[in-house]
Image (cartoon, rainbow, N blue to C red; front, side, top):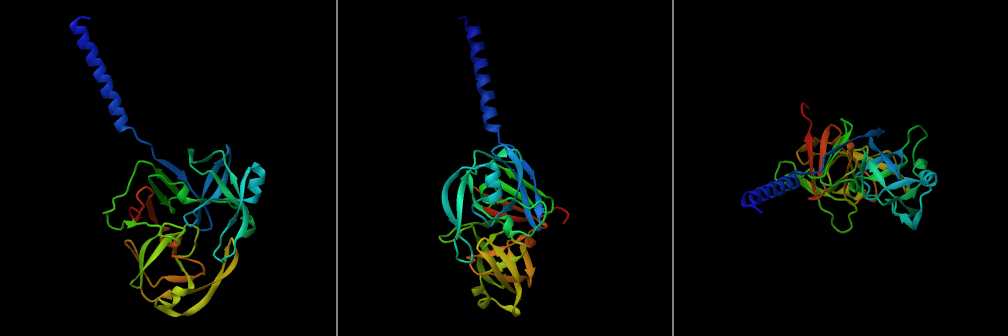
Length: 295
């Protein structure tokens, strides 16, 4: 082969290799923005299960596994993988079964949820239309960074994103033995405590009753209502904190505290971040609350 033609082929090959390399280094997974609804104060998302749906599920950071109502198990004819039990805050185990999925998609994006435990979820809810048919664990959806904007009704999944741990207000999550959820440090009246995010809770701060003896309160505990859990109904007691709650860069004076048996850490509900943006870096276990522009 003549030298000039040999050089031409070599140059074209090199250019082709360079283009492929550039495409490989610049390609990235695109963000997916999903519309979320509301059931009371709880966010909900539509799931497609085995190509059928959509089905409305509560999006819950206070759940480490996905739950599905018994009625949907029957209508989808889901196969039973094993019998199991669901633990509850009332220290009673509820008989259940784990049913498998072939596929689950959210906002057109497939997510790695292999199945769900069955429960009489509708029996725990008051009568009405558009009741959710399940609870999907927030932690099973996330890769990269998830951005939850409750007031904007959106959830954005950014597979290639990450948070800067040095940015003010960024909290480090951990999961010590015995804790079912990723937790991070907050302060209540100057006392450092472990807390977790619970999008399924309509109350700002819920704690175990034993903590009522360790924190300064404005007045005595009073009965505040009833919480309906998988294990049954439990009475809630509450009082206001005599001091400041600090969560990252958020400070709240004299917040309402509720007390419910069985909590290993402080339960932070939607009132704390309903008008803020919640970003979670699932890979690096970081969390940050951000003020919305113009707020």
